Length: 197
Image 1 (cartoon, one colour):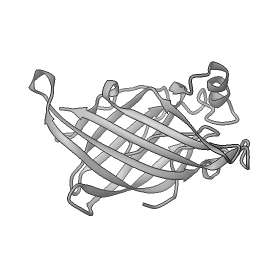
Image 2 (image 1 turned 30 degrees about the vertical axis):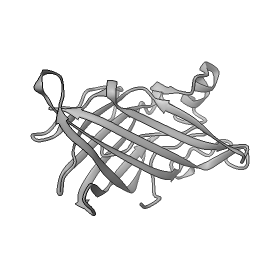
Image 3 (image 1 turned 90 degrees about the vertical axis):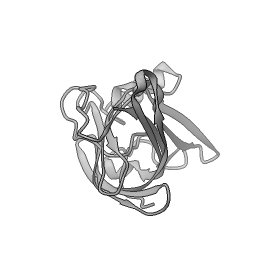
């Protein structure tokens, strides 16, 4: 797994997979392409951790994610995360994370990733190469994705899921507030999504 770009913040985070480039207002549901699964936000998680005071890992999450994915050789990933939905169980800290010191969510409401290629690397693993957009900055990102299963959900809908875990540097996107012993530059992301079609 390559360390290039994906979300960051002092408690930065973000999503991964792919993204339908998102611009403008958050949470505009992306229409899934033929064969793709539409993200089910109720059963999906976008988590992050950052090292605090160089002694412990602090965790947070984003509560709103949409988009679509088709985990297969030559498939697609198109994901948007609502930056304003960051949640660290502390309203004051969440407000700070939404400010210009970190996500600047009023000006840049979405964190997005769109995969340009998906290559099978193992029985259930794929390499997804694409572009991450955070705070208006676009950077290439390649991550390892695990196909976590397929089945039948409510209403006999086809369901599928995938998970990716990777690390990015928030300073690559201009999120440099507090970088140092107090708050790490490296941010670890866990993106676990379920979708239906």
